Image (cartoon, rainbow, N blue to C red; front, side, top):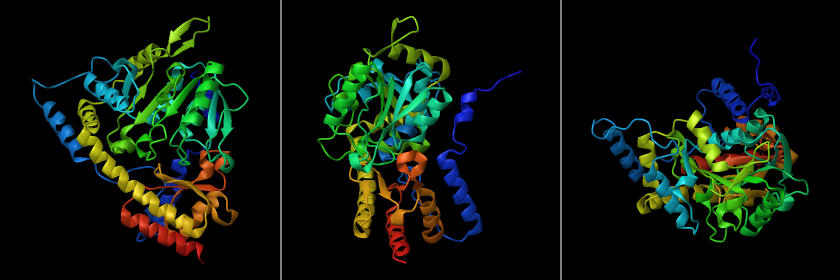
Length: 400
């Protein structure tokens, strides 16, 4: 008799974004002629940069000729041309990496969930709350004990190390969902905490390209000592609009180690390489060539223009919340606005009010953890027209 992994029974019954989709589908089926404005999920709306499309088309054409056709990738962790491009991108911020420390993936979500495969279920995991649901769900599936560090208005939704120890630490900066960004001084405290506890930080930098303040760190590896205690996961979904084409990367320093049950020390990088070799066949050649183009000077300039558009949307949203006197975080170095639900409403009640009265879709904060109750997330990844219209509808709804 086959038996299931019983840890799946410990998951919440409904995944946040599926529950949102269910509610939206019910509404649209009852109101087929009405225009909904979707500001719930972090899906981009601007097309890929021209240089990215050109590189993808060129690579796809290569796959149609015998002399340039490519099959399986040799290394299993990405083509050298892309790993070296990522290496060069980090070098511009003063971070030195070896190409062997870079693993090309199909996105930050996959690696954020899969990385816990190589860590024992005996590890205690520390997650900041509110948090991206994948951190909690993937570790729940793996049977690990999960502790929470509270992100609250009092600490600017930037949780700091607790007194209790942990073995794995998930940090996200700029944060999804709250839009907060850790300073270098704050990350120094997290690195010191990890070193003290011989823990590993899993640092999600998926939104680093949105940081506008030059004093704020884009990478955990800008912090001294981080190479001995951190893994960094990043994605081109938000940096370059790859939500539909899927490409990201994970950085695991050579000196990062963990321990076998017999106490022997092992390289995290080598064990992850072994895991990927067994369970992942890599990202397609045309997509990797497109990703390489992102890191050229022209590619970065074109992608920054797109990011600037989304940040302008965020500024429009922020101005509306200021006008309404609603407390919020995010927006200036993040594509998310995280705001307190008006009139003391809980997150799902406000979701339904916004959907039914303004026909705008957002994300209930309670779906990101207990500290998200009473808060709400909206994204700036819409068109300018829809962003402006959604804010008008919100103002009208709250003025009734």
